[in-house]
Image (tube, rainbow, N blue to C red):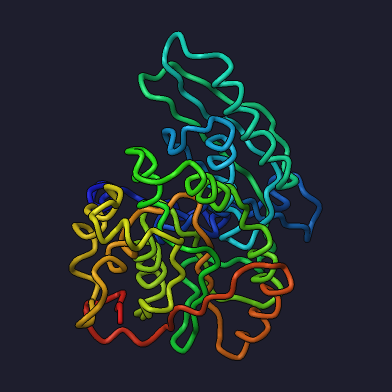
Length: 333
């Protein structure tokens, strides 16, 4: 994250007024407005949400790997308050790949795209020494429901909709440190769409949102704080943790995302005294197809909790937004 940020910092950014959300705010997706200049009737606008994501296998089960890759890609659209419309496969496989294994990956992805109500319109595949699989997804969003990184305001409260710890779980699964049954439960969580959480958010009126994926909770929360000019305080003891993940992290079983997160974020994160180091590590660690971090005014919190509950989405209030009074964008306490 840090090195690429330095590379992009020197590049000229687009000033096209059609670009509502671009790379400057490190959002989950880009948002482009189409209107009369693109052939639509006068007064009609469509805001397109565009994103792309792919990664190597995190699971032994080919079908679930495909499903998780799709859920992970779709999640960026949900995080912007949007609805997925279409998707394109992006895949790379070694020469001489096992055809049935690859067929199962594609089937898992196809089924998850269909579950989201989107259309798989095609894709592109290349030869790659390491398998890679994911999607470019296009969605639509109403301007009034757009939940970009830059919208958080002092006094807002923060909710997280999925347990953390997938970095520990996938690392443990890779080295056979957990049972197949436990890994399957983790896989099913990762394959769960964020559609219901997004619907609850849209019904409640959020200021900002991000999905927790490769940058981890700290990294994605940092992006909201930076874009909004605020500090986000996260209560470590309130974070939902996947069963067994804390014990794995205490044994040092975390993904490489923990070290990368600490290196990239150490100057902008304040860590309170006496905190559980395993939980701190999980807050830094990379997630795969994690939940939504929803930021909204406190007077709308009860509405959000009700909307989440009636959709059977876990309710976890994990933090608050405060004025930025130091270099810290994130404070763990």
